[in-house]
Image (cartoon, rainbow, N blue to C red; front, side, top):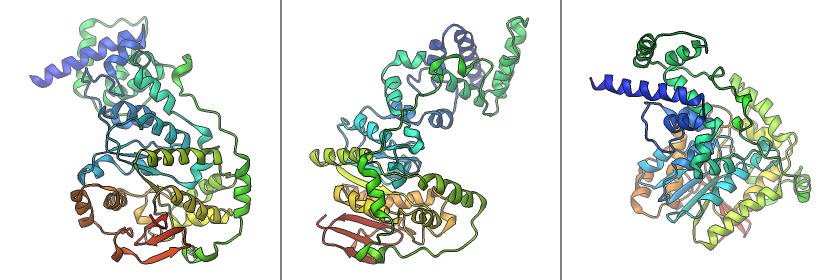
Length: 436
C-alpha cells in the first residue's frame, strides 16, 4: 500500500511537471530539481551521477554545507577521486570541491568562493603541471555560472540547462514512462484512463537508461542550454622564456632524483593511446602561464596571512606518461615547478618513477589511479595535516602501499640544496622549504 501511494505521488508530480514544462521550465525545475536546490519533491531519482557530471561546480556549490568544512580539497578529477567518504572514515571534516577537468581558473574562483568559510583550517590543492597551459581545456571556467545559479533560485528554476539535466534524470530513472511521453504528439487522442494506466505501470516497472530527451527539449532552441566557456588567456611574456631555459639544462645536484625512465613494455590499448595521443596533446604546444601561476601564489599568500594550512598535491600518472613529458623537453620545468611550489607550501608528490607509477594495476588509465590508491593517498596526507590524534592514528594503522616520509623511519632518501628539502618514502615525496 505504501509503495502504491509513493508511486502515485511520483506519477502525479512527474505528470504535473510535464505539462508545466510546456509553458515554462520554472515549475519543472522546482519539482524535478536535478541539483537539489530545494529537495521538496522526492521522485526517487539517483541524481548524483548524471547531474554532477553534467556540471561539477553547480553540484558542489549547492551541496557545500552552510557551516563549511575544516578541510577543503580543490583540483581536477584526480583530486575528486580523494572522496569525502575517505576523509570522513578517518574522522576528518572534509568537503571535496574538485571537478572533473578542472582548470586553474576554476580552482582559483572556487577558492575565492569558499575562502569566507569560517570553519576552514586546511586547504588541499591538487596541481598537475599540464594545467598551467592557458589553453588547457580552452580556458574553460564553469564556476561563475555555478555561483550565479546556486545563489539565485529564480535563475536556477528558469534555466533551460537545468531542465535538460532534469529530463536526463527522469529518462534514466523512468525510461518507459518517458518513451510513452515521446509517443504523444499534439494531435494524439489518448483517454485519460488509458494514459493513467500506462504511466502508472511504467513508473512501477521503471528500469534505468541514459538518453537525452531531444524531442521535448531541443538544446539549440535557447542560448542558455550550453554553458559558456571563457576565452583562453594570453600567455605571460615570461612563459616562453621559462620553458626555453628548461630544455636540456639538467638538474645539477638534483640529478639523483630524476634518473632516466628506461621502462620498456607493451601497454594495454587505452593506456597506449593516452600516452601516445594525449601525451602529445598535453605537451607538444605546452606553454607555462605565469598569469595562472600568480593565482596559485595568491592562494598561498592568503592562506599564510589567515593561518590556514595549505598543502599541494601532485597526483600520479603512469611512468610512461612521465617519460612522454620528458621527451617533449619539459623534465627540467617539471622539476623547477616543484621547487616553486615548495616555496609556497609543502608538496605531496606522487608523480615520479616509483613502484606505484610503474604498476598498471593501480591505475584505471594513464592518468587516473584506483580507489585503493586514493585511500592510501588520503591517509598519508591526513597524518601530516590533521590537528587531532585520532585521525592520524587511524590513518597510520591503514598504511600499506604508499608511505610518505612523514616520520623519520619512513625516509628512504633525503635531498637538499639548502633552500628546498625533498624527502622520499615509498612512492611518495614531500617537498618543502628547508626549515619547513
